[in-house]
Image (cartoon, rainbow, N blue to C red; front, side, top):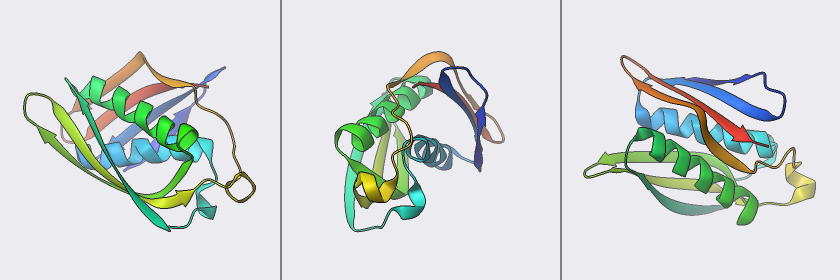
Length: 138
């Protein structure tokens, strides 16, 4: 139900613990957005949707983080509230909804640019709770 930022010289490393997959992926999304922007200044003015898939949970997490970086930095959308549904058929798929607004650098106080997620040190474990660890290249 939270994320923790771990010390690293040039990258951002996060650990997420949550009661289920959906909440874990929402928390991971918040870690990305809060690394890039001041979320306290974001208003819920518009809604966006996003579909992300992966052959397993590690690929799903990697693809999710990558799409969040694109949504925020490339598309210029600042998300305040996020919901996700996760389906598993041949592969995992996230169906996500975001509420927020277009980024205004003066209003949203850009902090740092995330270049990309990486598989280095990535972990996803399912048990009584969900544990995820991932590194973002800054």
